[in-house]
Each structure stands twice: as C-alpha cells, then as structure tokens.
Image (cartoon, rainbow, N blue to C red; front, side):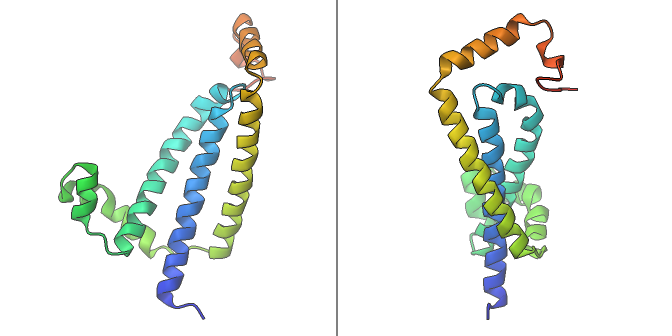
Length: 155
C-alpha cells in the first residue's frame, strides 16, 4: 500500500516528467531542419506555456521537499517576496491538484516515444543538409509558399 506522502511524490514527479517530455517534444519538432522553422511560430506559444508549467512543477517538487522560498529566490536573483508573489498560487495548485497517475504515466510514455521519433528524424535530416537546403531554396523561390495548403497553414 502506498502512503499519501508517497502518492503525492508519485503524482508530482509523474507530472513533472510528463511536462518535461511535452516541452522536449515541441522543441524537437522545431529542431527538424526541413519542417521545424515552418512549425516554429505555431509551437512557440505552446513552448512558452510548457516552460511555465515545467517551472511551476519544478518549484512545487522543490517546495514539497522542503526547499525554502529564500533559496529559490536566490537562484532566480530576486527577492523571496517577488518570487512567492509570482509562483506561490500556481505551486499551491500543483501541490493540491490530484492527478490521475495511470493516465499521466501513459501520456509520459507516449511523449517519450514522440521525442525518440523526433530525435531520429532530426538526426536523419542533419545528415542530409544539402537536401534540406534545397527544400528551403525551393520554398523561397515560390511566391507566398507559406499559404500553400500542401505546406503549412499559418492563418
């Protein structure tokens, strides 16, 4: 039987892992030389939100383990009060919110697979940069290539 304290740790650390993997997956999408820059604008807001979520979960884990706000504020180079004002409510919600552990684990597992697939695609494309360059030269020569539905829709 898992204690309530252990369950809280499992929930926090699973959520943290899932959030980190989601951020890595979005970043890997943008890192693909052929398609990444075209997806960049679409993913940048997601990445910003994912980074903020990850930050809150990291601070929640550290606070749950006993790290005081003063120590965290020193890392950020701000006062304890300003950091507390900026993050405390979100950290408290992260600590209170019960997560569905099996669902979070399954999502983390899926994200791990996506990150691995993306990394493989990035490495493959990096090995063929002449072809990547040719794709972008072709796009550059087409008037308003970004509005072509066979590419990507930015609107």
